[in-house]
Amino acid sequence: MILIDGKKTSSEIKSEIAIRVAEIKAEGGKIPHLAAILVGSDGASQTYVNAKVKSCGECGFESTLVRLEDNISEEELLKVVEDINSNPAIDGLIVQLPLPKHISVEKVTDKIRPEKDVDGFTPANVGRMALNWPAYVAATPYGIIELLKRYEIETSGKHCVVIGRSHIVGSPMSILMARNGYPGNATVTLTHSRTKNLEEIARSADILIVALGKAHFVTKDMVKPGAVVIDVGIHRIEDASKKSGFRLVGDVKFDEVSEVASAITPVPGGVGPMTIASLLYNTLLAAEKKVYG
Image (cartoon, rainbow, N blue to C red; front, side, top):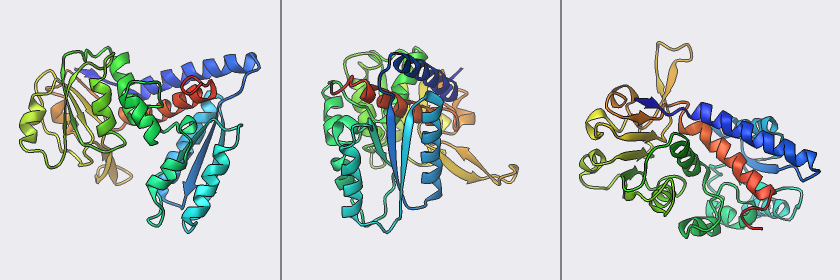
């Protein structure tokens, strides 16, 4: 069984990015600059944003963190987004989710200019990805694609089952795996919570990508022996044996599924670290104008 190590792979990608940034600096070029907007004081969101800002520093990027109160109006937030859109010094913009309930995620996402949308969430980038045009691909799906590539997982002609249909992971993942190229050229089945015979469909997968958001949902009896299993979920569950009182687990029961899988991502340390690495890569592409010219 191969352990697909996202932590190690993300470190390799960050090193590659840092080398390129050093070259840009030596050539007198523009250093990539990522801006992040954080609305409110949600603990998890602050942790995620701080990790992104820290990673920017590790790669030699410039970064700007805009902190806003959770009572900011939608109109005021849209104005902040537009100000960053218009700032030529900033290459990429992310708005950390979730947003307060009184603010429309769709309106905010749609306000971000596609050429600065390094999260890959705008309709323009989703559409370009679906057409296999140059685009910023959503960070988590892109990270999974990069893991499959670097671990040389064969995808052509394979049956890929995606569990979960979110706009952030499941839906784009199904498109990427079906596209003409590598990784890709798979026959894809996109499933979700209302799919009938889900267990039977999962057992037919050569590559099983799980992004349902339910802890330990996929068990050993749902996985075909020799399948590649990619676990996107992350959940905090109580564990009295740990000093913290909890531990992190995925959507897959790792201990038992790893007995039958040919390759599997762990949680933590699998897909998670790849998300930030992909975001940094998209920002580098934005700075070098390799997607929108």
